[in-house]
Image (cartoon, rainbow, N blue to C red; front, top):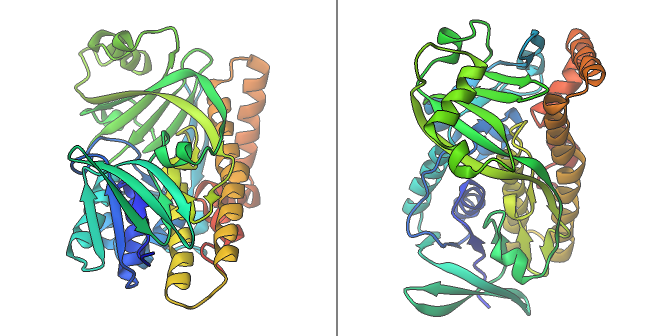
Length: 401
């Protein structure tokens, strides 16, 4: 059995794990079903805790050169305006990055691919669709379809970062229990500057509650993006039509002219966590292990934390620094699943519930709690430690023996 680990999936999570291994002198094979890197607009938020971790991989300076640092965010109401505002500056004593960095995830993918392509330790294989994985002895064997033929690739470990529909997770028959929200979400990206053209006091990250149609507004270096809920009975072709998107945007703020729409994506939203993050020599990472509401920007970040934790543990094992293989893998699986449930699922669901609440009394109580939290320095700091994911990383101690 080869000592080389295999990473399944060449998204930001899989490539983070691969570059961590390669940069520490560990040969790694990356398998990706797509024929080339994907460039779709997806997640775009990197929290302070994630930047601290990625700084170990030498990519954060490049990320800052292209990204947008956001020092504050708001909870708003469509009719009341600002409900509460939170400042990341209260964390300046615990992180070098007291802000959210807005950068579309494909830029991190490009940075990691560039490094991996130059590394003699990395074997990047696009157009390799994984169809099965089995544990065998002191490693695992992955079956792939490539150019119409089937190949078997053996590795000491498999890190499965192949997304929410993970074939690895399904082949290992690991349950993926949870819930699906009663609406889809649509992300609309536009050329307009929502602060200059629409709402002068709008923060670069704003959660906007409303009993009928909440929304989320986010500024990136490339555009402003808005997220709206879409009822399940509204056909996709209607929701993504120019007419319906313009109606939604005008409902937020009428311009008197059409918005310049650059991109749109619509998808179902789930809160799901895999029943186990480990099966033998196979570990689940990122969306293959947990998916959640995007309201909080924690999905991509938590996946990168998975990659760093798993990668650091494999470096110790494969470098011969420890022979306690099962203990390392079990610690990863236990700790990361706990974080997915106790932090990521809890916080993203809370944000979604607050924004979607329709009962006037409950909405008023929610707003009162947010105002009180923002006004109390101790409570605001505790809130920001969770929002920045510093609390999660501190509690788990990523990669700790």
